[in-house]
Length: 169
Image (cartoon, rainbow, N blue to C red; front, side, top):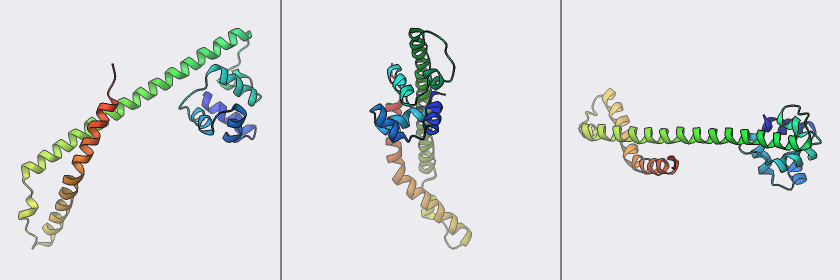
């Protein structure tokens, strides 16, 4: 919600991300991250954004707050804390999905390798005199050739990915 509001209000004021970044003394990528919901500004920066966009902080946060300034800062901080928690949960979910995708990739590579070892490269004894089996033999040979060369690299990359995405703790 905050990210959409910053973007909408910035555009309605006719400002580019670069122009807003200059006004706030940050880099354009920071504005982009806020608008994509990848990060959130702290409470002090949120006040500067509201001043730069000539918009109340409550509007940026998506609601009307009729409180004293001290209570307003507290409400802003609470809202930002909720947004930060949501971003952390999203990051954790993505990390878990990536972890299990990498584990699945390793399992698939292991199964395909076991199958190829078990069938002992049938393309070596394939009958290439029949057009139907010749095409199938060439296709199988191509798959096996690519797999044998790519699988170890992919497998090692997936193992490294598993260790780098596993839950710390």
